[in-house]
Amino acid sequence: MSNTNRGLIELRGQDSIKFLQGQVSCDLHKLSDDKVIRGCHCTPKGRVIFLFSIIAKDNDCLILETHPSIVDTAIASLEKYAVFFKTEITDMSDQTLAVGAKLNSLDRLRAGMADITSETTDQFIPQMLNLDLLDFISFKKGCYTGQEVVARAHYLGAVKRRMYLLALATDSVPASGQTLSNLEGKQLGTIVNAEANEQGQVEALAVLSTSSTEINTVVLDQTEISVELLNLPYELG
Image (cartoon, helix red, strand yellow):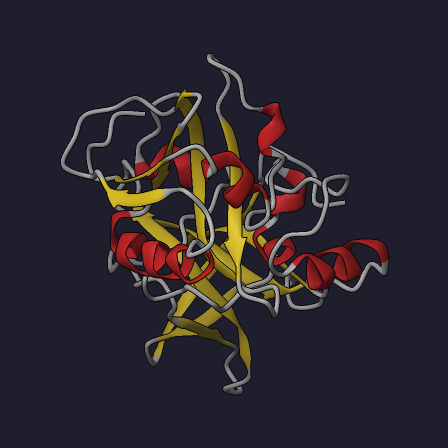
């Protein structure tokens, strides 16, 4: 993907792959010259700090693409663990590089692929964002930060919140991190990303309780809005 409106982070040095392999959810041993893989970096409690697509630029250089608002947070988080490795972590967002196929924000949303932003970092475990269904997580690689929580949710089937695609009858695009409630004021979930579509309506990815999906009206920013559940291009199971 072109880095238009995207953030780019470079890891350069002989320990870059070794270091990142112990930090992120995907298996970097699957990287090759022409292969893009996706993953996430989590807190020790298994909460997603940021999502990324990654390529190997050469044997000692990795490029991660992520949401631009989260670049500084992502670098700071990685640097906490990088002190004993020969790798330099740099913001390269001002450069033009290709990391995978081009998707605009609405296409990404309709593909059911979340963007974690500065407003939603450290809120969701990976399965709440359906990352286990999108090949962001390797359950066969070794340990990485947050792995115990992610594995427990996977093997015990303890995921009670998932991300859904919604059509909202409004022309006001909600911000990432905004709360969705029912008419009684009970919180139903959280907006992950939202975009205006070609008809001027809003489509949104939202993390909801799996028991709260039979809804046709939500309250967003104190306003009642009609809502329709749209189909994702993959099965939630």
